[in-house]
Image (cartoon, helix red, strand yellow):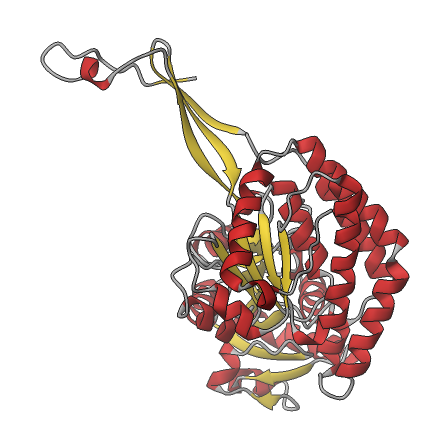
Length: 437
């Protein structure tokens, strides 16, 4: 029997991580059928034990009442609807094609000398994430499917919820019986997490899912590669050629559908050519949904009731029903604003002009760029990735919503028949073919 939850302080961080590293080697050798069977078992066990998980979550929410603002309390809450969505997400991941062992390229170097580029797991992933109990099943499901071992640190607000979920994982391990001991570890304290950052020999990638300060703090504290995103300062740009009704619908959804997440819009840019017509209608729709507008002087000339926006507002991630609004002179000015003030996360344009649309899509330097749809579509589940471990704004092997593909890397496999390099150098060197197969 294996156990997902351990007190690493008792056994020592180095010893615990060494075991997880060993587990990662065994994990990558598991057949896809075993990993899928574990995912199906996880989905069934979540359904069976949901009452215990909900009770633990209630404990967390009671402890957080009065300490967290309403938007963050909403993130913390589990309910029957969320659990149904989580269960479906686990099953969707199980149904995805196996990401491991895919041959990306095959090249014939010479007769009987074949080179393949093959996908493999990253190894051991350490992840620290914010106070959302639904993040833990997403991460563990993606890790199971991609053959990666994981070390996890959740927010202190979700301590009871996370431990309750890991007890579910323990039951899955007992049922499946083939998952290597130590493949998934949950740690509770910031001190323990910072301790593991000292061991690049055991951890292959760190994924911080939280504030820009958290990402920066971890990046400056370790030699381990870090994959994360800064704030979600996302924009909706309403072009002069936009359909006003469509633009209002997109802008409102991008702000209010779930304001406490990183792909919610924080700034609305409006072309001066349409501002006088669009902004009053938007103010009416926004007011009905509880949105507080902070506007530039040109915005406030049209909407006198708006609060004045400061320079800091253009870089603010509110995570609340607050929106900065700026009137700009066309698509070029909008692109300049997004690239200057944005966090390179997700930005959208609303327009009926194909030229403006394609200019925005090609020139905005963000991980996800959208045309005529809400920024809230920037999500691993909605993109068909099954789920995500986070959204990367970096320029590494993965960018945007990071799903299964972002949790794999590749290696080269060369199969020969006794060839030696000496035959391919010198005056009578045998030539390489380098034929793509």
